[in-house]
Structures are given as C-alpha cells and as structure tokens.
Image (cartoon, rainbow, N blue to C red; front, side):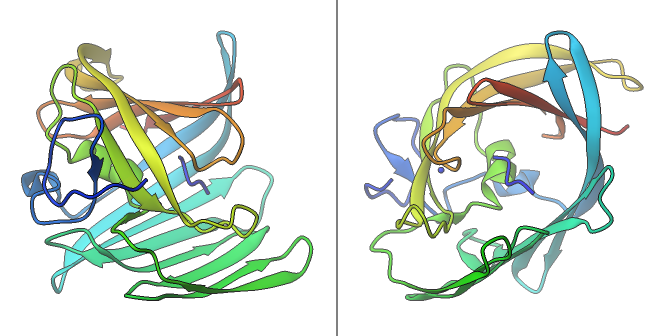
Amino acid sequence: MKHFIISILTITSLTVNAQSILMPSKNSFEKKWIKSTSYQMKWYTVNDSAKHEIGIVTTQIVKANKQLIVVTQVNMKNMNTPWTDSTVANLKTLKPIRHTSHNFQRDIILNFGKTITGYYNDKTNHNRTIVNDKPKNGYFDSNLYPFLVCWLPLENDYKQNISIYDFNPSRGNGIIKASIKNVSSGSYQTEKNGIRNVWVVWVSNEIVQNKNSSSTYFIDKENRNLWKQEIEVNGRKMMMKLVE
C-alpha cells in the first residue's frame, strides 16, 4: 500500500526545532499513546467535492515481547489479492527490526541492523535488487512513520523533521525525510462519536520520488485516534476515513 505516505542530521532526543531531525530513541515519542488495537479506514479518491471509495485499509497494532508490530492490509476494489505491509520495531525506541511488503507490483524484505539486508523484487519488470546498505545515521521504518505522527508531543505550531528509511532501487538512497510543517487545533465531526477536538497535522514527505507529496492528519487530542487523513500527490487527492 501505501505507504501513505520521510535527512539526516543528528538528534536522539525530542525537539520542536524544525532544523533538527528526529531519530529513534527512548525520548523520541510519547509512549502513553501506543496501545494494542485494530481498526479499519476507507480509502477514497477525491475530485472536487466528489469522492469514490477504492478500498479498505485494515491496521493491527500489537505490543508484544518488547516489540511493536504493525500490520496493514489493503483490500482494493476489483483486486483479488490484498496489499500487505508489516513492520517490527523495538518498543522502547521504535528502532526498526524488520519490514515486509507484498503487493501485485513488488515484494520487499528488509532486515535492519548495522547493515540493512534483504531484497526488492519488482514483479513488473522482473528485476530483483539485493539490499546491502549501511546508513550512517538513525531512522524510523517508513511503514511506521504515519503512526509515529500520532504519538508525538503535538501542540500548536509544533514542527519536526523525521528521518525514515524507504528503499527504492531507482532512488539509490534509502534514508529520506518527512517534515511536520504545522500543527493546529481543530474539531472533527464524526459519524457516531459527535464532535471531537483534534490536532490538525500537516506533513510533507519524500516517499514519492520527484513529486509533491503531503498529508493532513486529523488526530484525536484525547486518545490519539486517527479520524481522517487527507493525501495529495502531485495534485491528485485521496482521503482515508476511520470506520466507526
């Protein structure tokens, strides 16, 4: 899927300085927001005021054996095979351990350590790229980064760069950047839970190569549930909405 949605200086503690960059550490997020849970979001394309449902994304988050496991499965309409992404990270620091991704276009297996090993199998052109990478600085798994946004110490005008790893054979560099550009207070009208006070978080990232990509998250202030995510890639608009 997705990835819905990632540079490198050096920092091991949380800061709101937009010139710093966030990397995994015990202080890089607020642990109280992480909980084992599962939920679904409907995925839409958006054209002016009209939206068209194209799939459902199911997410499962599990805290187990000092690890955090996140699995997302995307069931697209008119496709028989789901897209599945999973990430395993250290629960205390969110340092990545393993990443897997499978869909009709490609398969990815990444094992994280001092050296990142694995492969990228492009099913379209039948190319298989062996991964053997030694990044100099820390990073979060790109599959975990959208969830990490919900676990940060959000407040009005909060800004933060985030170092993430997203392997792409054509890019030649796995470490890229996501940037929280702005956070503001807002309200969100749910379907079954009334009006909720939310953080409206605007994030840009470098995942989609050579294209302008950004997301706006509507995150519940009380429990950090993600109610809605608006996505724009090179002028194309999409939306994810929580199934209540």
